Structure formats: C-alpha cells, structure tokens
Image (tube, rainbow, N blue to C red; front, side, top):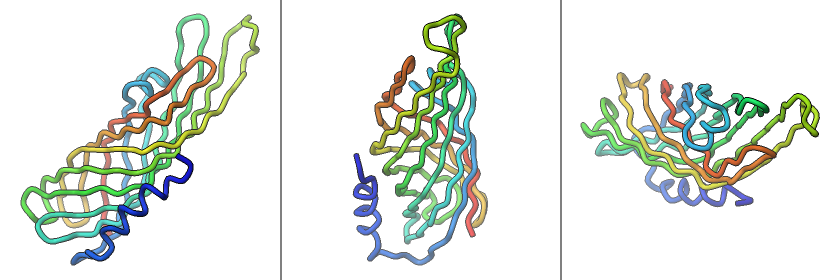
Length: 193
C-alpha cells in the first residue's frame, strides 16, 4: 500500500458530518508487548508506544477517536552461533470506535479500530568468523492496513487506561529474520485535554 492516507481519510471523512457534542485532544503513552513474528525477532523485550488522538464524543456512549501513534520494539534474536540486533518502528494513522458500556464517557469501554501502518525494520547481523563480517545490516520498509481491538477504563474525564491488540501484515524480512505480521499487545495510559 503506497498511500496509507487513502485508507484512513475516507473513514474520518465519513464521520465528519456527525461532529458530536464534544471534541477533545488526547495523549497516550504505554508499553508494547511483542506478539508472534515480532516476539521471534526481539524476544521478550518490551517496547513502548506514544501517540496523540482527537476523541469525538457522541450520544449513547459512542466515541470516534482518530489517532497518530508511534510504536517501537527492539531486541536480539540469538540462536547460539549468530545473532541479529533487530529494531522495528511503526507509525500508525487510523481511527478507533469506542463504545462505553454505561452510555457515557466513563467506566468500561470497548475498542475496534482500523488504520494504516508504516513500519521500518532494521536488522544487524553479528557472527564471529562467519563470511559476513559483524555489523552487516539491512533495512526494510513496509505499509499495511492495521486492525486493533481491546478495552479500556475511563477513570475520570481526563484519565484512563486501555489494553489493545494491534496487528498489521507488512511482510518484512531481512537476512535471517522474516516478519510477516507486526503484532503487539499494548497497555497505555490515556490523557484527555
């Protein structure tokens, strides 16, 4: 996918005429726990995520939340005789639909979202005595449609927390590592202004 805006822009524009009762600005920060192919590439090393969002609250406990997030994972893939130092960095542009169970913007809510991810994958190969010298590196880039789902708890009008599963399939691979699916479980603190 060469132009991720093509995916996200129609979603956001579809809801523009519905501008609700309140528009806020938000910030999130959290940890990213790698899943699947990402976990194979970086091990159990936790990454981090930061982002900005614009929650638009509607009646009935519904919120549309366009967002721009940055997520990174880094770690070493080691099989005993060689290792790869891997770094994945993802920029995500998308929109989430939040549904608050108690019909107001407080308490438990569920999340479903779609977006476009741009991922950069850097891998540095290290192996003493191998044909390739230490420090051989490769960089791959990929874009993909991303999906996410999860739930959260809004403690007050300004502060909440959420757990989300994010997944995209940019099909990245390097000399020794193949990443067909970039997936993370994120635990974030959410702030509204």
